[in-house]
Length: 173
Image (cartoon, rainbow, N blue to C red):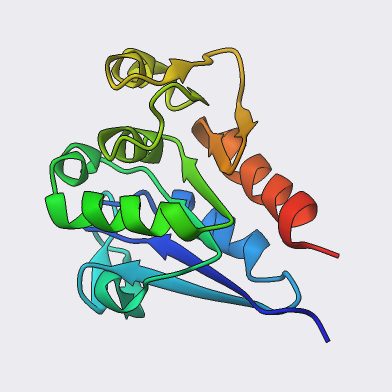
């Protein structure tokens, strides 16, 4: 029987659906994976552009020690970058997670939490300068970065490659 792997994917109002659902598609198929969509509160989350609802099945207050943390990007990333409750949770969870991953501008949220300081990272091409301001080492020529316990995928291709990389190398058989 496969060992259990608890995976938390952060959801917030305005999240890019593909940034959350793409990794879920890959990670949910790992034997023993228990994927949770996590938000500040349990309930519906309106994805970027409106009209599509995703569901936070668990709150950040009850999700204290996932093995894997995935932070997707979205049009409301700047709001998450100044949300002390979310940033504090990310810092705490990152300390004990096997690995922490971001998709596209989700890297900016990790950067705001101080998790990317001194680390190579990638994000949407238009936001590379913001990573630099937060102390990360932007890698605009790379779509997926694996550094220590962090993984970052930038843009549409990165959404799928980072999930596949993580699933195959870190959690799969």
